[in-house]
Image 1: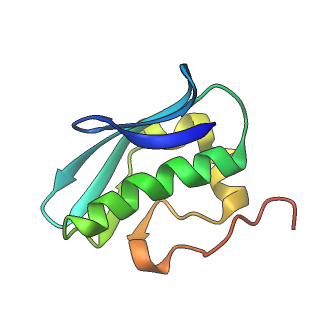
Image 2 (image 1 turned 45 degrees about the vertical axis):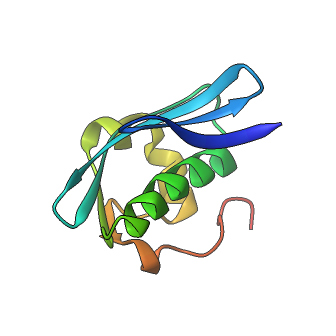
Length: 103
């Protein structure tokens, strides 16, 4: 069963049982959640969308309404981020509501 949760401070993980499918490393900078790195075990747009949203909404609950993706996070996932319509920075509440890939 897929789960996405805070593994340790600054790292969210997407797992299927014991298998790690993706990681997202992030930090807080004042009112901004900065995504420092993203890694996925496959080119799965829905997994990326879920992992990234979990991190950004965690930040939102902590009072950080804005986000920024660092180049290290964007590089391995650029095509998927573009397909999903997720900008490199912005307001969490203005993210597209659904994955666009495959529409």
